[in-house]
Image (tube, rainbow, N blue to C red; front, top):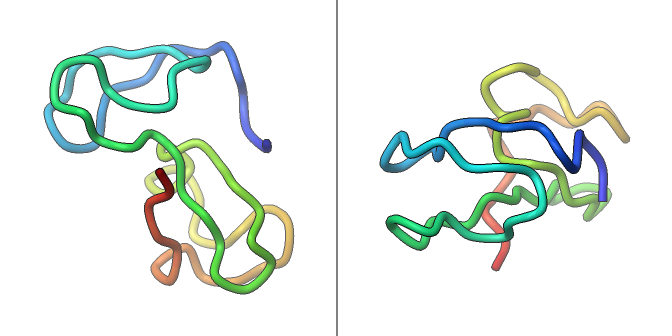
Length: 68
């Protein structure tokens, strides 16, 4: 899996601070991963806000979807 596996970040749904090894938010159950529809690489959800394109293949992140 790409991205920082240890860093803290906020859940995109509820804003609860979570950390990298979790797959789902412990407060609301939101998936914390995104999958690129082009290359199928899985990235941490916070990359959606930080980057405009998939770090693996260059596809726009607007086309990425939640996994889980």
